[in-house]
Amino acid sequence: MANAFWKGCALPAFAVFCASFAGAAHAQFAICNQTIDAINVSVAKETSGTFGTEGWWTIGANRCVDVIKEELTGRYVYVYATDVFGQPILTGDYEGHDMCIGTRRFSIQGTDSCWQRGYQSARFRLVDTKEMSRWTFFLKDPEAN
Image (cartoon, rainbow, N blue to C red; front, top):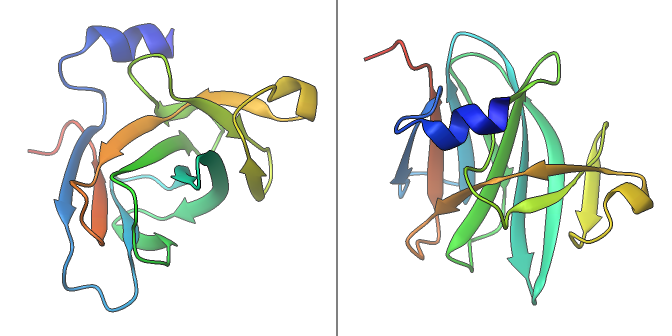
């Protein structure tokens, strides 16, 4: 049902705003939670032709976390987020971005055969960093204007 909701909305339940973040001293890809609730986040990126996923970071309300420390080398980063009960709150809105996630802290190489390898499959949201070396991704409650 959540995927159907995402596909049918012009603006998803969580409005997402992205901007380059040149002022960060260390963060190369940061996620800022501008919601009223804590969230759990996983990220994915392609390195040397292979996708890898990492998680989980718990980000409190109105907090930011540096999730990728090294300078970004690819144009795209992928993000998946859940609430503290494990329910998806930010997922991809089209096929092609299904990747593996674990139930606890994880670092997984490859996107094939998630279930067979003991992982879950989740649809990540594509974030276009415009080939910037640093980027901040903002999650915002839909009620906030």
